[in-house]
Image 1 (cartoon, helix red, strand yellow):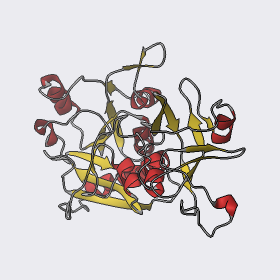
Image 2: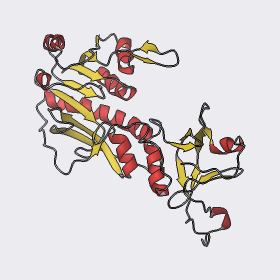
Image 3: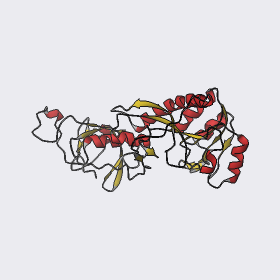
Image 4: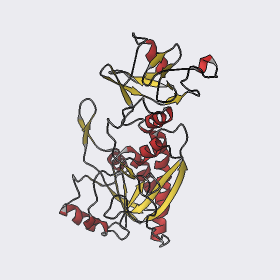
Length: 320
């Protein structure tokens, strides 16, 4: 099958590499234009563009596809059988969808219709879902509403960050896509309309990742893992932003009358920080949590005990 691949960030690279190694013919790549990043704010190609260049593939970088007559002409000239899309970053206008014989297909990292939208992996971790997966569906005019071609399911562990889960799904989704394209070519795929209640994973911003210490330890644990590494969970201390790595809820209540051994009894009000020799604890709306890593303003992420030893104010710290 002749494939024109559309994608931009690093998670899409695994799929492009898998397609290149398959029996399908990748005839080119569509990606976002070069973007400025780093301290020097210099222009850099997207990870997908870099991968395509490495393999000698033509790369197309339209600013937009909407109303882009030259891209319509290009698509007709290239005549791909299918256009797989993974985190491309541009909307696909309706006028393009039926040009390839098998249309545009999307690899979406959730079990649709659960978690349609921009951040399905983070949403699944934050919600405490015990499983998620990758869904391949044919793109239509709606937001992740097209008929399903295939799915693969994976468990979400209690330690998974969004990064862990996305890495796993990228490889599982890549294998699924290659097989699905083969099945499409052989006429062995029956598109199935999405069924069940839809939920939505809205685009994340930095405010979304701010931790509310009034919430329970379990919720805070999930939210921090969901926002690791991006946009990065954070809290505020004396007007400054402190970034946080994953935490461990303690197996006790905050009640001072807990029957657990004294070493496991940590009674703190929400946001109150206790620094000990080998641990840093923070109170929540339920039980305290032990921090793993902390990033102070202008510093690199470090283990919590090291951060604690460098803090001059050892008592009376409250995060908000």
